[in-house]
Length: 202
Image 1 (spheres, helix red, strand yellow):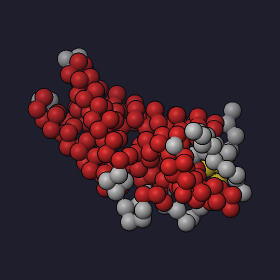
Image 2 (cartoon, one colour; image 1 turned 90 degrees about the vertical axis):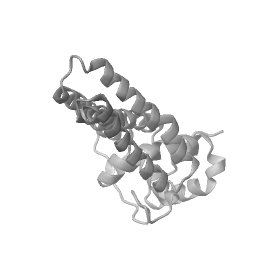
Image 3 (spheres, helix red, strand yellow; image 1 turned 30 degrees about the vertical axis):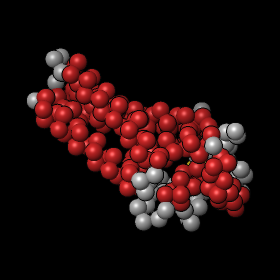
């Protein structure tokens, strides 16, 4: 069913870094995420992954106040990371406001709805199950829609990818505002013998 993608690397760029520029990380991400279908796959499923983690976190305590405190702490740590990782740019801040915060609210209210008939263990199981399924479906997306694939990078896939996929919305739909990034991506792909990346032209 799946074709085995070619394993290629572009070592000049970073999969995940707090020391290099954010542009270098987004260039790496775009080099290895060619297909628009894969972008949609990851954009949806990475946020189901985050929601699953948040929902599992709601089982950290049996009291409502502690649930909120633990959930908010986990979300705050992720938000701080994303803002630092993106160098406080619009992409990171908007991802926190328009994605992370609503997912926290959704996880909290789902917990409130289900806590009367779900045990803490069941809540953790469901949350982790959602996260695991989303990751597996992303791997399937790579197999289906990519011609080649980079080496596995855990920090990229589990931590950095959600805000990178969010950033890709803007970079793909407004390529003229990100021409330097696209030039780098095209050059790197051509050096690897792959060709131009699919973007959405204005």
